[in-house]
Image (cartoon, rainbow, N blue to C red):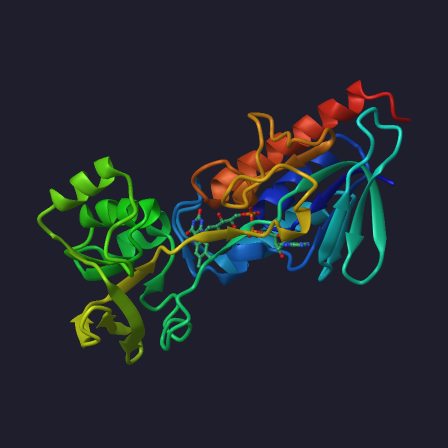
Length: 310
Ligand code: FAD
């Protein structure tokens, strides 16, 4: 069996693998797609100490670093179920794969990440990375002085609009419902900004452009009338979906489906740790996922040296 089995091969999983393997313990990674969301990222400018890189380039570096160690990498494999071991370590945890195989481990680190909820309208996929963005911390500075829209009036949408208003020229916030759902303090701040316009009851129907985004079309849900806004960027903030469906009923999840972890990355199940975008840890970023993955591996090691399991 593995001493540490990591489910997920994004920045959190890769960091966990390196930290675990450096302890000389038997380490494995099972990942549906090694690299995770970073594979879909173009420019990365906030990975500290690297001024600028690209997603696939960073993934290659991650893979090379992991391969420096004895890590059993099982790529293109999807975990379907986790069966926790017993609290005293007497029986092992089991990760069952979609292909029918099962892997046994003394400790498990879940690092399955998350995905942005998409609008599913024409132009969204086509202009992804060409004006359609999901992360204001990552891509905000690319729109300096330009016009953008934020889709979604929940806390993340309103936070994004406030954040972007300090960088870009103008922000239009579009909310589907007839009211914003964000906290009152955030709404107050939002309405105090002179370069933000809020449009409620607005259903985005299309992102338009030629080689880059040049506008979006929304339907006024009250009148049914279509409207067009000319702009250079669209930030979609309608939710982040953690990849934790396969854990339902085993580890405690938040109401958003995030794995609840403590400061050491411990979940509600002894011997099961979690790290990165799939957890309750706020701010979903590469550097944070790597830090959390490292922490979870150190916690798993700590758990192993304290447990009686052979
Ligand atoms: P992920 O990267 O999501 O990796 C999850 C891993 O788990 C993958 O290997 C996946 O295949 C695997 N997995 C999922 N479910 C299963 C399963 N059931 N069984 C097996 N494996 C599974 N962050 C920045 O810091 N800077 C940026 O510039 C930046 N730009 C971004 C641009 C885009 C377009 C996107 C989408 C994200 C961006 N981010 C950026 C966010 C960053 O990519 C994430 O915060 C980071 O990748 C999270 O790492 P993670 O390891 O927790 O999860």
